[in-house]
Length: 181
Image (cartoon, rainbow, N blue to C red):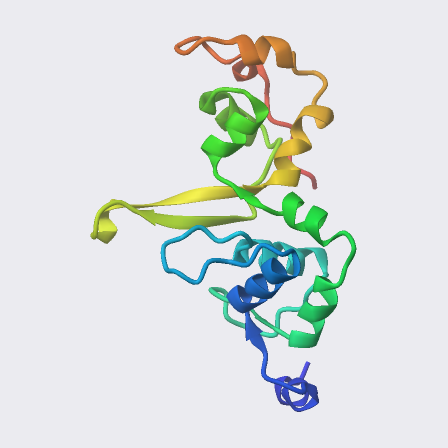
């Protein structure tokens, strides 16, 4: 696609992923906070998942950010199922995902090793002011975490949820499925 032709056809400049997230939050009636450091209701992570779903086009070649046609964002904001889409694409860290499944974090880590869930994106989290204390934390969509239990009836979920701290995970005896060819 010719970027110049796209820009010429747009009535207004492209907007960033965070600006698109703000518009989506406004459309849901839960505006993102304007104060720095407060937790956003809709994040650029959700916007990237909308790009992955084909709901929004990314007009940027920048891997660290996205740009979107404001009209297309407005069209997405008018969808009747917008709240459900945002809820499904809300990011969860590994601790949050484990809590949502009501399992230990160690058991969730086994689910990741087994390929039961994949992270579409990670974020860098810094401890203190130094990059030396930075680590990457995988993020998972709420929908992908919610899909684990129905997709894996072979797991004894009641037993898994009853495992005590310090006990070996029942998932440790399972082997990952072979990668698709």
